[in-house]
Length: 200
Image (cartoon, rainbow, N blue to C red; front, side):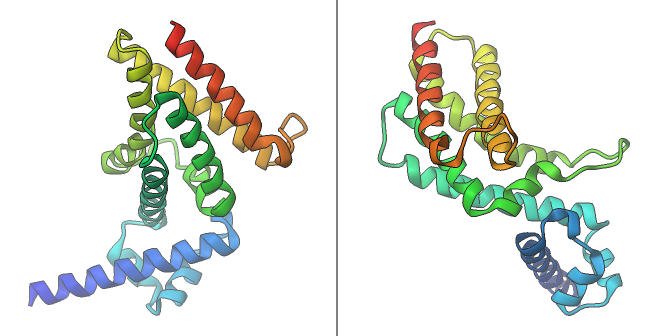
């Protein structure tokens, strides 16, 4: 009996995650409402709080599935390339491609604001770290003598720089790069950073 209840709960969770994901795709995270999600999932409002602690926990699960999509896409793009500098450029282009094709899901990864006394669970924070490891691996090949801590910081810096360029540009800020030049400028920027990593 307990197994049947758990199966029903898992089915409800999956339906709620899919409903929330679809709502974010259509309307963005800022317009996500519990009542809309439960209606789309075909359950009562209280069903959400049976499956998840609150709406924030549901968003963590949606964001984790988005990160899984991104990891899969970047892994496929890297499969044919062995040169570390080229891998870094592919990662930047792949990240841009994902952001362009999944604008609202991508934005939800960074727009999810929490109360000051709430922190995301470790499992969700760890889900983000594949991005940094993807960057750290080619950096290690470009500069094998770089200490692991420095390499981690360099990978975080590189991710932050690329993310910032893409975010500012896609938001249409006056300092953003025009859409027609964004990919080529990212490519040149990452190539410079890769050359610097090799030289240092």
